[in-house]
Amino acid sequence: MAVVRSRDLFTAAMLFAIYSLLSAALFTVLDAGDVALTEAAVGAGISTILVLALLALVPRQEAPPTRSNWPALAIVVITGAVLIYATADFPEFGRADNPIQTHVAPYYINETYNDMGVPNIVAAVLASYRSIDTLGEGFVILTAGLAVYSLLATRRRRPQRRKESRE
Image (cartoon, rainbow, N blue to C red):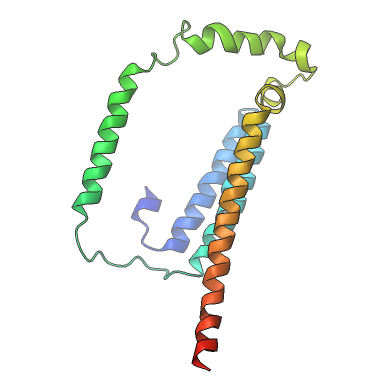
């Protein structure tokens, strides 16, 4: 709630970083060390650094709204309604007879150690059974990082070009 009410972008970035660190601490308490490490590195570390780098390029205070944005509100409401309607087809959360509970999860629980020899089920599933998915996620993160880098590099080069054209 504090992030939503904050009008200063630096304060909002720091509040998000604190939230990520608290989430990482919670995951540590829940014995999910791999998730905690990822949350601390990506959520509190890299994301905060990228946001702070971007803050150097924009004004710190939010600009006052110049006009109402009814079309955007309509799109958000319609999209939200469609997504809520789509949840009617979801299986009931937590039921023991859901498809994921009857086939995939028992296989992972019973066969992970025999297949991989790794005692941590989460690490074995992510590194072996779902390795292509994990590789895809890494590719998405790499692509996003390159996109941010290219935007920052383009933004830094523009003032130099303007100076050269004046000479």
